[in-house]
Image 1 (cartoon, rainbow, N blue to C red):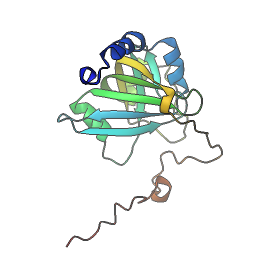
Image 2: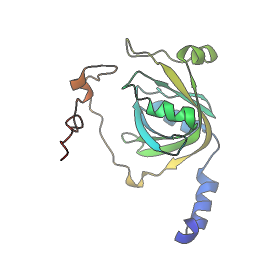
Image 3: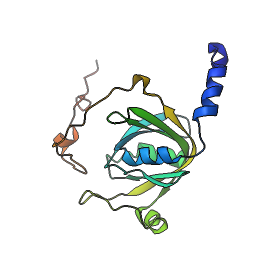
Length: 190
C-alpha cells in the first residue's frame, strides 16, 4: 500500500525516527499516568477483538523497558482477549491521553499470562490493588517488540469529570449498563 500510495519515503522516515524496540523514559512516564487503554487481539484464525481496559494511573505496570503487565479482572465470563492470547500471543495496545498530553502511544508485542501469585512473586514491588474487594484473576505480560507515537492530529481534548462514583467490580446490571443497546430484546423473525 505504501508503494501504491506513494508514501514509501514518508513511512521509512517514520520507522527511522519514531519506532523503537522498547519504551524510553518519556514513554515509561506516559504509561504511568494513563488510566485507560485499548487492547487488540486475534484468535488463531485471525478473528479480531478490540477491548477497553481502565484503572487508576499506573494500572499498567512497566516492569522493564521491554515488558508491561496489566491485571485482568472477573468480567462477563467471555474472556475474549485472554482466550485470543492463548491461541495467538500477538497483541497491540494503544494508550490515548485525551486529557493532558493529547497524544497516543502504540505498544505491540507478544503476550503471556500469569496468575496474580506468579507475577507478584516475580515482581514483589508491584503495587497493591487500590479498589477494596477487587482482585486480579490473572495478569497479561506484554513482551514489547515495538512502540511508536500516535500523533495528536485527530485526538479530541476531553475533560475529566470528578465526583462520580465508579462501579468497579459490580454485578449490578443497571450500574454496568444493563441492556443499553437492546441486544437482549431480539426481534422475532418471520
